[in-house]
Length: 135
Image (tube, rainbow, N blue to C red):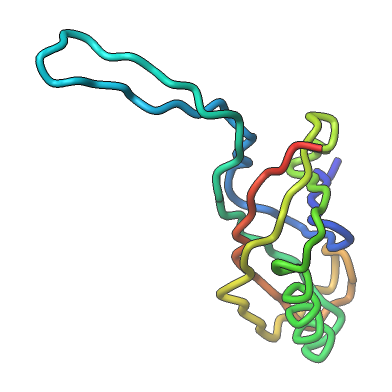
């Protein structure tokens, strides 16, 4: 059974990397001449992380258009659901802001079987910089 990988409406054969959920943050409190340290909790927030996407496309034109479509998600004021390795992260009460899509690589490749668009003639990979946002 294939595992489900998706950012917003975009489906992928693979998303490589780990999801970083919002975490409780703290500042260390230290004073000269005083033994020990204290913690000041500053709230719960996400930290940026990167996922690497891989997917086939019907042809090179579709692959290039997909790359342009990925760019439309960057810093547009919306947050998106993510499914990674079959886990839908909306179940954890978070969605994700897309901070950047970079290193978009499109290449010709013949995939007669498998993939999302068989038979496919192109391949697209990209790096996604994301941050979790509580909903």
